[in-house]
Length: 182
Image 1 (cartoon, one colour):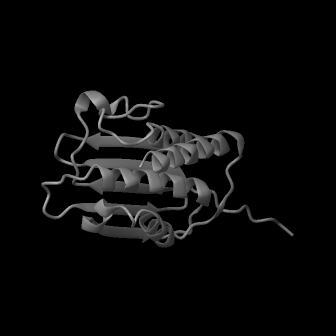
Image 2 (tube, one colour):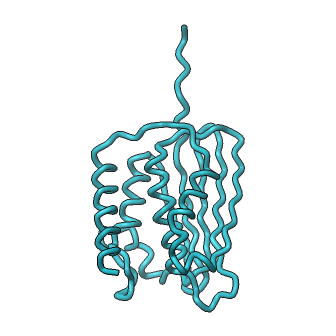
Image 3 (cartoon, one colour):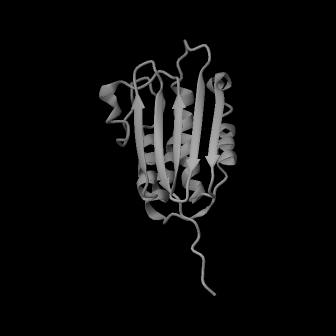
């Protein structure tokens, strides 16, 4: 278990380092594939087996963004939703809603987990912040998510209350390729 913790910590440090050094790229994003990949990445967690996955994509426009960075965002937010599910909840779920326009993609990740105390919400994006002493994470996941969102010139908001789940709302600009004039 401590080896796995160290491995995740090292992955987080590498993600942070790459994000701070490299300029974002822009490629066509298939959100359904990306979300499926995130859930596959986390399927070995015994907690993941209980979770119902709900995905709704309203994509009227192709979306171009940095796939690697989006993957890190989804992995972190979905992993947190799995790890902080409410053990008393009979039907735990994670709902991912994506609405893409020419300008941006609005992504909502909602769960019915244990939620976040109001006084802790403003601290969750701080480096090394962990919600409780029982937390098994490095305290880097949401910090890295926020750093990536900033690098992509996007925004992230969170609404949550104790025992009522959490919703992360991300707005990320669309970067379609510029058509060249012959």
